[in-house]
Image (tube, rainbow, N blue to C red; front, side):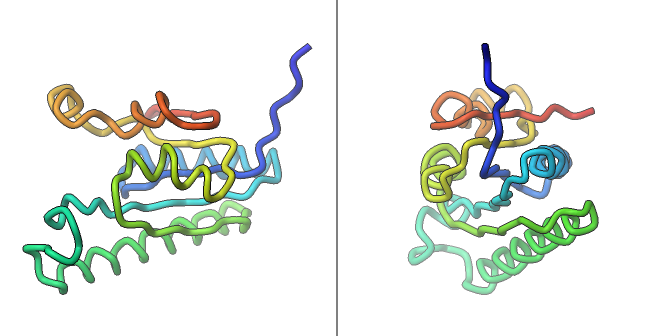
Length: 151
């Protein structure tokens, strides 16, 4: 007989999209049922800034602006969770590859047993060229993955 799965730590990837917001809202519902901690993560991809932050062709002001915007986004998610009646939420801002961080590093660091992500916002050509982060997470994550589809 199958045991009921209870999750302790839910990692949710956010990128500011509607799909990510929906995934977060569903993560709050799952966390409430499981009394789980939510780790809401936003990753600023280094490639956007020329590969490494130190040798960026972008000005430090643009990098700081993106960092500030990301922090505001994460605070909004924490506020949204509070409004939904849930406060066991930790916000994480990282720099690097979303694929690597969401599929390997963050689940291990926070001992996540569930990753929730929105379905890719990429079109078919973008997915072919770049590959979707959610597809990569599904294939390589060390724990359960739930991909939230738009309503």
